[in-house]
Structure formats: structure tokens, C-alpha cells
Image (cartoon, rainbow, N blue to C red):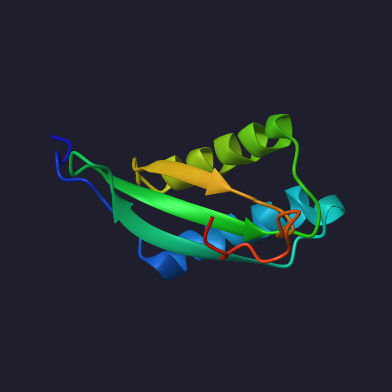
Length: 103
């Protein structure tokens, strides 16, 4: 009988799946690095948050394709957690200059 226990990969194991995919998929957007964080949703469901540091904005279609590849890689290792992928691109200052300035 199959085990009903969820299997969660370690951050290091997740990184071995995620980094090659991001390196390949986001190369043309100036991919530099990524961070991986295990988290929970507001109702306590475990999730994985992946942030890709890139030099140029990544189109939504490319983000979705890469997210699907990450999910597929995790599922092959029996980790069923939902993944949130972000690639915010370069930081922009507001027109006023200081983004932390109180309004």
C-alpha cells in the first residue's frame, strides 16, 4: 500500500532541481541567482517560494512555463507542495527618488 505521508525535499534538494531550470530558462533575462524559502499559506498549507534574481523583467508566459517545469521536477521526487515563483527584475526608484520616503 502507498504511503499517505507527504514527502518534503530539503532546501538543498529543491535547489538541485530549481537552479538548473532557472539558469537555462532565464539566461536571456540576465539570471544571477535565486533564493528558496519554505513557507505556509494563511491556512497552514506548506508552500515553496522561489525568487529568481534577474537583470531584466521576465515575461509572464516564460514565468508560467518555468513554474510548470519546477513543479514537474518536484513531483518526480514526490514533493507535492505548491510553488510560488517570482522574478521581479531590476529595482526601480519612484520618480521622487527615495522609495522609502514617507508620503
